[in-house]
Figure 1 (cartoon, one colour):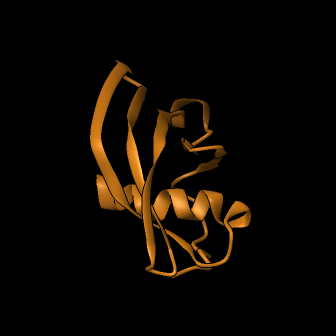
Figure 2 (cartoon, rainbow, N blue to C red):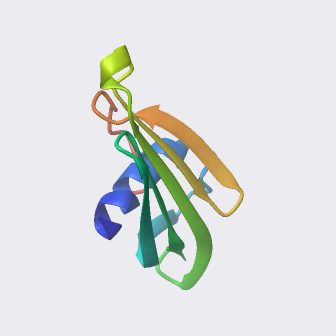
Length: 98
């Protein structure tokens, strides 16, 4: 899951990222199943800048299965001060910092 969230978060937050920023996994990740349609993940995402600086930012992701209401699988991500949400199954992958 940790490496999957690298790409999911980078794609959701790509428009907000400073050039050269990339993510390198989540440490201390905990999953809390709130109900059959919603899981909240938390931990600390490793953040890198041009492979020179590495630090951690608080990480939170909420995955909601809304396929019953035809809204797909929604993923909300927050890393530090950046946050955003997209539909996972129809996400177009344009992450610019790979």
